[in-house]
Length: 403
Length: 188
Image (cartoon, rainbow over all chains, first blue to last red; front, side, top):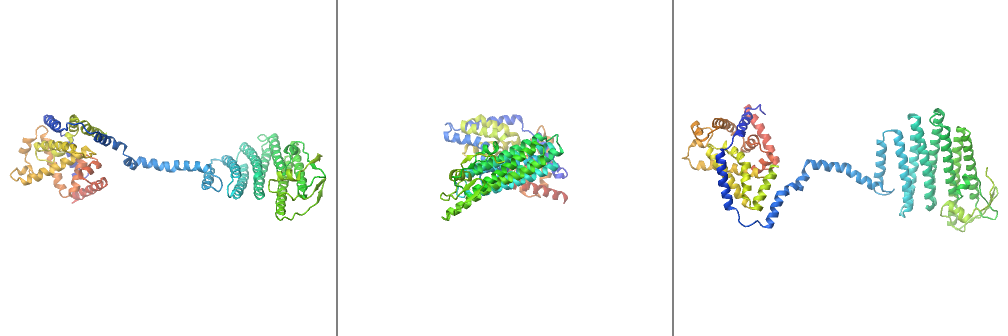
């Protein structure tokens, strides 16, 4: 600015102006004159209350002036920050409670995806994903419990999501195996195994109050979860082979046993047997000859028997440190167990259809020590477990071992 | 903060009938108002008269039930109007020394007679001011006012806006245009 002579001069004037002061005597005399003037013209009466309030407001008003404050840059910046971060916090917390089909459910899913995207390591990602599957299971429970209009769709949607999530977990675990340290792989595989087993179990519990179609979908999700659990066991077994000091044989034995137990328990619940009898005594209740039973029920019992046998073999093999063979057996056993479940469901659907058609076909079927006849007089719309126990009444007369 | 003190004093005057509070306002602003007018008026006495008149006018204003947002800006506004009045009245009374009316024709004897103490410095400053104003004459009136209030009296744009009765944004625009105009004046 000082480049311009005129501005330079102005600046010089300013410096002089700053030093310029009126005569002290004049200031004092003017002050007293002014004060006298003011005193003479000052209203004698006290100010009215209303005017005092007005003056008070004039004094403090601008301090609290909301309009001005609102326009202030600091406030606008704060508002932007709140909108960006606070706003998302509020809406996300609302979304957290949303269920499939809700308006905010997509926000919840998007938040989860964002969390996954921001996860620093593959193991963290995997852990988050397993946590999210827990949420899906919770959602399933809530959806089942709530008498919503389109409950069926919601259940199917949640089951589909779970299925997809399970596949992702399986894939992530596979990726981790090649990228991460054996220790991390071991921990992650254990978590995955634990969680997937829990998912299978939890889903089984929700099935009780579902329709047949819904149950089929949920079983699919269960199969996916179980499949992922098997993958986790495979990963552990592989790691045991390469890094035996990190993943001990005992670790593999433990996961195999827990997996088998979970599968057997779920299967027993699904076909309406006492879970304990399946896993501990490995015995199969055989119905009495005077008990009526469908051919499919008999088939289920056969399948359950097979599955139990395979799983027990797997247990045996893993204890003998024949891990590869054990894994093969686990796969097979798991498959068989779910096959049994599917058979129950399919037969239930067939029965329900038959009942609906009011043309119950009498089917006599005989298989290993089981006599079954059609019991179409009662509509079958509840769970397979219930249907077997309530209407078909598998009553054991003897308990020969299945193996 | 300055404004807060002023507002408090105003509250004391209006709500508590405190005459001393007005004296305090006078104490706080008498110097700057005197400074503002002293370079614009030919004689020290004129500056003193105008300054005293500014505060009398302020007192009259305070007595009216009007809201006052910024006392300092109001004082400058009154001072500016009084300076304008001063020259308007001078024009109507041609028998008074012409030297008093303009800066350019101001004589040393006149100044030495009226300004004591820092007289030489003030004479010089007035001389400079007359040159500056002569150059500024080429500028628009708005430009002159804003430049003087901003550069010499160091007022904020908010206060200048109050004094000139314009929007703050407009005052900023005028200021920047005035700086450009000065550059052109210098170049030419």
